[in-house]
Length: 553
Picture (cartoon, rainbow, N blue to C red):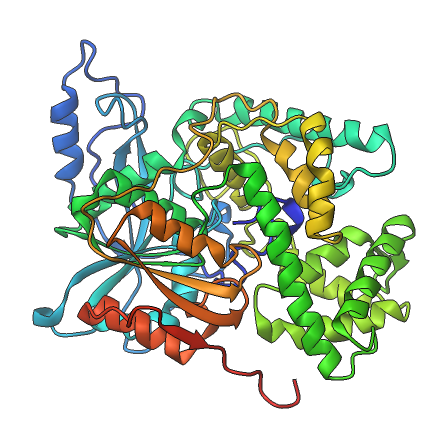
């Protein structure tokens, strides 16, 4: 779950085809602005009963709202099954369910199998935080078609995201984030600009979305998931979480261990880390993944160097040179060091991007920046096509089609800062910067300075690290990828330990990229499908090996 802007832009690109849908209304349990429980018409218990008794009004999905990323309405699946969308009412504050309420956006595709074989609904969260599940699920549905034999495939926009009371932080007075150096290394002015950007962004979030900011954290989202479970009529929550979705799944298991059904967590977040430790681990994870790429490149006669060490050193030198003197590109723009990091970090999310990355780096080293610039834009473009790093703002609490773009970057910041009580200063970062540089001279600085993103945040954070202990829960299948850059492999073992004895059950994928199931690896898919469809866990210590890239790549 990346924390630097340059790296977080690729969180969902590894899993999402970025099709989206906007939503239709259902009969509300309560309306925005209703105040109940303090002289109103319902107690908290009565309000909870009304929320649980909803019947979503499922309808065909129209074209997605801009706040979800825009695009065309999702097409029917090959067997003719149409995507259905609805909204669900939930308490804005789960501690005060008789108070104000909010909409949650849902999407589903009904099971393709016989009714007698249906297990229930399989709820997905694809990561971020800040990614729209409504936008993501249709594009990934072919990957999960086998699972649809026994499940309805369901996803949602978590609170603060997309069509679920979107958080809005951007403001015309703020500079474009591309104008702010993520790695202030050229004097006090750059650092002052970064500090001011984070401070002013926090203030803009409070101006535009102050009413919802205290309620967008992972704990409240987990409570939303239990409401979704109940409204869909499932006795247990069957769940598939990827990246940040593993943290959300762990939070659900902690809150509702007796209601956990068959759950898979893929690309597992380390629950033992605070934000600084997470960023440091990610620096090491991205460095390790890049070294794997460099070794692969060297085996194929990479022009950057004869071995992995030289290729890594050449790339670091190229980034530093571009940071000092950007390279002109044919569209009239410039390729700078940040764009190089965008391209490299994004390409590390999927191994099939590696051949393009090789060509791009070789060309840039030869003073041709076009391919690397195109790759950076394709993997990290902001404000278009549902990318998770696309900032926008609107002061309206209810999202409409007049919104200017996806709110995924704003939601990323808001959820992260709501979850974490860490509020680091520039002095804190300076003190830890040598560790980050040792972990990765290429990725370390940006990840270190990203720790400032919650400075000045108007809402106190929840805790230093997530609570995921779930004694009494059934087995949860954890899939760890040894080459994962964003959620390093070690996190799976630590999640297993924190979930508790007999709960966390590990499957290792010796591969590359972020996550494992969406890599297409046959061994991983067979193991995960066997658990979700038949309840069969893989053998203890099971390992799946990566399939090599096709010849010529």
